[in-house]
Length: 509
Image (cartoon, rainbow, N blue to C red; front, side, top):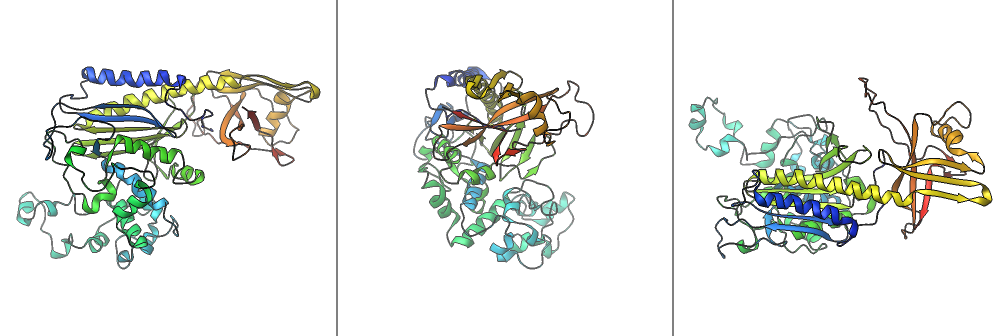
């Protein structure tokens, strides 16, 4: 089903935003009155909502108990306060890859990292740059970082716990690439997504080899400088620029080669700028951004999928007409720091949540804020659709079109008369079924939904909107137990007339 927003991008102060902002404020009021999920003595956070144009809402909170700073006693959290964003860093690595000229995402990674050539337990010729970016490489999550031989330097210590002795050939942590080639894969390449930090370390090496620049310089030149993100870096800023949670030493942790997978420091303001850069297509074109915001593989759950490197949530529970809505997220976790980036392309909205201290705070804010955004944005969407309702007519040709709003469907066709012919009842169902104009097809048990396509008649103007007609079969109240009962296939242009689309309406503002 087409799922695109017909409304212009939100601006701060839009009257239609008031219920959404009130709902978000309500979530934070409950949290700051004392939620069991948030320890207000030690938890600091910064949350922001942005459209493709500007930041719409912010809220910050500084815990009275903070960690040890080298240059101040404590800080007040603002939109410029820096947090560690952990694995949200992976989105920067992938964006830098997408901005790389002269490559294909389907290039084998060994083309750009010759150190991977030669004998290996992984067939690197089948591991593409896309495989790495979408967690489909099949390689292990870590190399060395979670290996017990790196944590316990004495082999005898591990043997006392029942581990068998290792031969010298099994101790290969000193040479990254040689060790990586000896490491067993988790899956065959492109079989199934599994979380791996190594994927993004390898992408950074490929980028460095392609550009003869450090990964830090690549991120700075391609993303941070163009978007003027002045509070984002791969190196630790001054303590007074960030929030250091009590009892957590990870503010000072030097990610080194793990920077591309989890080492970036950033602020709420900068990350809103970053999400605006994606939503406004300022770095990637519309088509390339659309391709980036697409699933690459399925997860074991029906309502989630993997992207590059998005963690995609699919839901129907909050949509006003039961359609599927996709949310593109990336979470990040380090001891003491937990973050979430969430894009709602359908609503032209982006959410940033940065927390310092227990992960429960992120889990609470993530659940409550995203639920509020979807519910209130859907309400705005449904209200906005009603301005298209009514009867459009041309007496000279005896042509009329009546559109109505249905709370369970959205904008639908009630009647369509074309040159005196009941086009809705006698012609439309035949066209949908590709039966020409013969046969017994009817609209019984069907509805004709009218949905925005995010296209305009003139690519340089938004004056004339292009909408699509989708003929939908009514589903039984009993979903049944057949494999095909919930199958949904989209066809927004089944037939044309004189090369022009029949299933398209144009609305002039």
